[in-house]
Amino acid sequence: MNRNRGLMSDAGFLAFLVLVFICILFIGGMPGDYMQNIIILTIAFLLALVTYFTTVTAGLTLNLAFIFVYGFYIVYRTVTLGETIGLHTYFWLIMTPLLTVALWFFTTASRELQTENEQLKKRMSSLAAVDENTDLRNSVSFQKDTQLFTGISVRYGIPLTLLVIKVKYWSEIRRLIPGDQLSEAVYDVSQLSQSSIRTNDALYLLDKEEATWGLLLFTDNEGAKVVIERIKVRLQQLNDTEFSGKYKVSLGLKIGAVEYNADTIESPLHFIVEAKKQLEYDV
Image 1 (cartoon, one colour):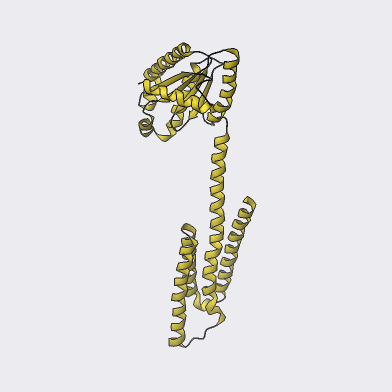
Image 2 (cartoon, rainbow, N blue to C red):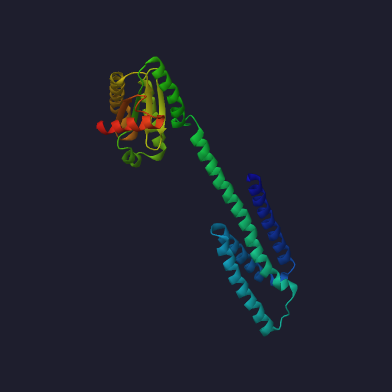
């Protein structure tokens, strides 16, 4: 399918160039009507551009209007000036819509390729296991790893707790921080969280747009509280020394924690939902 669209786009572009070349030869072969032909060629280009930026229906509708006006002009010159109607008279009546159709083929195929390219980028992004800016594992990795970690938790009786971390008032902060600094803020908070956990604990960037992270900790609720306190103390230190000057605002975090229970938590997504519910109690 991609190959067919590519061939269609190339064919449309080549046809447009060939038609333009034919127009140039036609104008050069009729020096007596040079100015008239240049004007009509300009109109033909404008009609083709309308098709490029709108639809082929709009372009062909305008072409019909042009054919009507140009035909009326030819009849007028024939009746009043006694000019004969030769083959060259019909040149622009045929060439103008052909230019529009050729450019439409090129435009349609190019837009389809662009749309498919965007879809492929989104699909690759959704399948990627690591965020390209922070090098953190994302929600795809979280779902795969959670199945492994919960299996270990159940088999060996090791408590497993999920922390969901979210930046407070992120929607308002996004409007205060310049766009190029938003990724830096996400990265800095990611590094803050990463530095507050043990090497065998796992940090995930669950939602970059909403600045939400997940922490899988092999500990119970009491141990999770220690980690939460450590993260908040570290954040306060960075707000006093770095973040307030860098971003002109102080960043705050809401953290919710829930311990894994095989009887009540059905899936990794359910695990996240339960942890997010605890965010409501962290004000």
